[in-house]
Length: 261
Image (cartoon, rainbow, N blue to C red; front, side):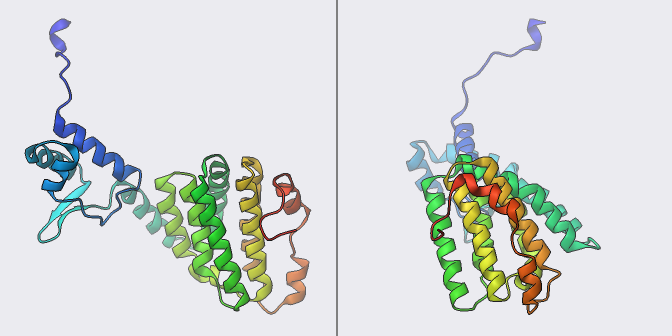
């Protein structure tokens, strides 16, 4: 039996370099399209020879994580995440009832993300969410459709949840839902309702209440989905479709969001 094993060898320098760069890619600190520093600079940063750096880059290249481009240097490639997300995007785009399927997926994905964000959000994440809501409020005051701010809010929550795969999935869903989201944000009443939903979600995340955050997110998505069937000018129906007691009770424990009383 002994002859089937080999002595343990100390890890080679190039493997450690490759591992560190791989970690930066996985964490999102190096993104697709980013260029690695030149070999000479990397060698200085790591305190190793250029040969070790060159070998590390070759390992990353063989793993499909980076690619050399003439005149550009070594570029971070679209990674394994895209291999997962791209087929998903194709399947969703081919759906016969795209909007319904996408909202179903949002209800599966985003409440757990809000729950995770309530546990993991940093002070920087909370500051970013506040700034997004401030921009959304300004867009509402000016009568503009705050589609970019709406996207940024949900994307920031996915960022706070610290899940790179779901970040890319959210990107795909938001892009495919763009037309219906524009409709759901048209009109002052709808725009204010969307912002109020965001504030409730934020209050739960800021209050570190994961269950309230998940509940507020789910009810927000359900409310936005219900607006799809309501003509923008149908004010009476919009009033009948106002948030119900479930929405209030889901976030009561976390208190009011900034700007609410």
